Each structure stands twice: as structure tokens, then as C-alpha cells.
Length: 199
Length: 199
DNA sequence: GTCTATATCTCGATAGAC
DNA sequence: GTCTATCGAGATATAGAC
Image (cartoon, rainbow over all chains, first blue to last red; front, side, top):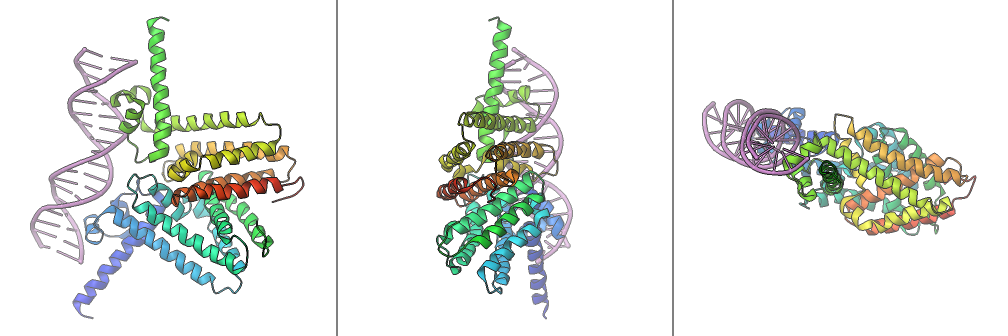
């Protein structure tokens, strides 16, 4: 490697570290209570240096959203190795339940971010947060459609909505058991669905 | 009325105006993005005067939470005029759907507040937000119990969770129709429940 | 590309006149 | 009780040396 390539690699490593740190810290503390210093510290990058990679704080929020979106794609991609769409959805619910302690402590990463960004008058970033949720919604709808169920869009809405709701309640009441209880109901519900039948 | 009583009344009127303004503005803009000046302006009270009624910003947040809690009590109280608990729950869902435009714009007042407060390391106010949600949860559970349904706590969790989920999605996607679609499913679900049967 | 120092701004909170 | 003026903390963002 030449020196210039070396520098480039190190540079993008720092950018990557900042992005990962932003995704994590913004989830834990929220956008408004997170300072650039917080993110820089976790990423082990000097504060002033942050501006070389991200011109504004909003760009860091954007990067965190991309990170969540990429993570979601990678996850649904893995689920598609399962042959039966119903098994994919059940595996999705099981993963949510496994993450119950994180949900009880900080809520759903994308959901809490979207809720916070929607409080802004400036409506640029909140649309991007909504797009990540829409991405999950569309993927789930595809699974219901493959199962030959009617109104797959409404079924997807119910499932994703249930996830956001149980995450918010688990968080607000600081009770991971809420994820377990609602998760069990969702698994039973998924098992009960039959083609040409609604919920 | 003596002058001193006059002053007292005017004073508590101002306190009341500040509380109402806090409840509204904190819902619309969130806690972190709302300044004391914002609340004072809406309440038509000079900024510096706020501190005569509320020693800190957190006390204003607390007052807003009490306002939401009182509003909830008053609302469930009115619902209890209906003889059938099932009708009470259906009226509750119908009210949520009627509020769809507010939900799409700002989310559920208590839910978004709880989510934001839970991002704090300091865990004093978030518990109070959770308590308001718990209050709704308990009331709904009572209705299911009156209906003689098994696991009324799980049923209440499903209903309130569905409400929080659909509010968050409607808000994130800026789409009030989401409230209508999920609301319709909840009404059908409530109709389908029979004693000694689970969801 | 990296980092320090600092400018600039906003906001919560206080002091003190009236 | 009411209100103005302002302090001081803390944050984003920038200037500029290296």
C-alpha cells in the first residue's frame, strides 16, 4: 500500500467508527441530549476532528440512520434463508423478544429516533427515519403476501405496530417481560393465520 | 373579594395557563426542543415570571404530566357512564381514531413524552411518565376483567400497546390513515372476544 | 488529515428594582 | 407578585497551527 492509500483507509475507519458510535449513543441518549463530544469520545476521535468527516450534527444523525437501515437489510436478508415466510416472521418476533433488555432500557432504535425527529419543525431528517420503518413494513408485507394472505398491508401494519407499541411500553415501564408477553401473543397469532382469512 | 384573594386567583390562573401551555407545547415540540420562553409566550406570561410559579423546567414537565393524567381520568370517568365495558373500550378506540390527525402530527402525548424522558440518565421524571401509561393500562384491564375474560392483563397490554404502536407509526410516516386501519382491526377484535377465550 | 483553542450562541436560572 | 437584565454553563461550529 502507498502512504496515500494508508491514509485513506485510516480515514474511512475513523468515519466508520464515528458512524457506529453515533448509532449507538443516539439510541441510548437520544439526539437532543447527545453532544458531539459524547460521540467523539465513544469513537475515540478528538472532538474538533469530527467536523472533518461530518459537517454538521445532523449529518451524523443521518449516518446513524443509514447504519440502522443497513443493519435491517442485512438481518432480513439472513431471514430469507428460511424457506417458509411464516418461519421468517416468527424468527423476527423471536429476535425482538431476545432483545427485550435493550428495548426496556432504550426502546426500538429506529422508533425512538423517528419519534424524536418528528418533534422538529424542520422536516428533513424525520422523513428519513420514517423511510427506515417503511422498509421494515414493506418487507413484512412481502412475507404475508407470499403466504397468500389477504390484505398483507394491514397484517404488516399490525405486526410492526405491535412491535413499536410493545417496545415503547417495555421502555416506559422499564419491564422487559412486556416484550415476552406480547411476543408470545404475536407468535400464536402468526400460527393462527390461514390463507384467505383475516386477523 | 378582597384584594389579596384577587391576587391569589390571578396567580393561580397564571399557574394554570402555564401548566396548560406546557402540556401543549411539550407535546408538539418535545421536552428538549422546548424553551421556557416558548411556554411563557403561549401562556402569555413574561419569561422571568415563570420562576415564581415553577422553580425549574422539570417542574413544568411534571405539571404537564399531571395535566395529562387528570385529562385521562376525566375521560375514562366519562366512559364509565356506558353500561357495557366492551362499549367503553370500543368508544376508547373510536376516540383514538378521531384524534388521528393529532397523532400523525405529534404522536401520543404521554407516549412520546415517556419515550423522551426515558433517554435521560436521571431516572426521576420518566417513572412519572410511566405511571400515567400504567394508569391507562390498569383501567383497560379492569374493563376486560368485568367482561369475564381470562388474562385481562395481557389483553390490556395488547390494546394499549397497539395504540402506542399505531400512534408512533402514524407519526413516523405522517399518515393518519394508519390510525383508521389499525383502529378498525381493534374494533373487530374487541367484538370477537368472548368469555373464557383468549386472543 | 489531525488537533487545539476559541468564537459564538442559546438557554436555564438568578439578582434585584419596582 | 411582577418583570428586566444578565450571569454562567454548555453546546455547535470554526480558525488556524501543525
